[in-house]
Image 1 (cartoon, rainbow, N blue to C red):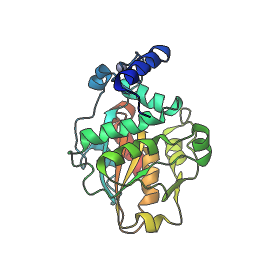
Image 2: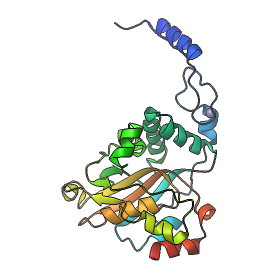
Image 3: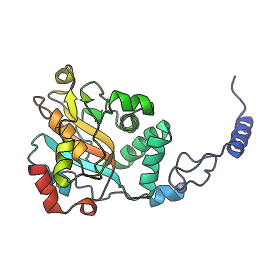
Image 4: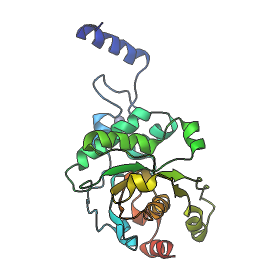
Length: 253
Ligand SMILES: [Zn+2]
């Protein structure tokens, strides 16, 4: 039985009073018509507007990986920023529907940017089974699911698997960080059938140093005929983590 519209609105208003939904960006209560993020946060979200998918600094640093076609992000990730708060809500407060919404938002805004042109599969960066079990979902998978709804590109989760987590890197030297990120991922026995000779876009929620993404690229690029692109819902502005010279050192090592 369908509730009459005015009764439905009344019930939702009472629910909002009892259990107010909060903006994932600023924590203020949302109006009844708002979803996940208030209009102010949506407007102030620090988007990456360069849209230089083939020639941005990160892709130039990784140009030795010949399969790599494009790399981009939707927003900048800065400490306590709106984007960081949204990612935090998604990952640590179980808001898996927020992830789908975030994926839809990014894909809608970037749909005509050329970033997704010709992409045939979206491959979310996997978690280990243990972490996935603990969290209940993979945040990258939720973002990819939202992107898929807008872009009509299938999500493929059967090709890439995570062998281990990166240990916390805060006490590591630069050398140790690079070693810590190698061999994180492996291919499944069906990977060739699922992803060879296709243009695959790897999808993650956050890219900081990029070593996790690079490790996934290294695993996937062994498939014949594969073309790879990398997308992060948010990334750290590169000069804020490392100078360009140290990055080149990391990548070419
Ligand atoms: Zn807000």
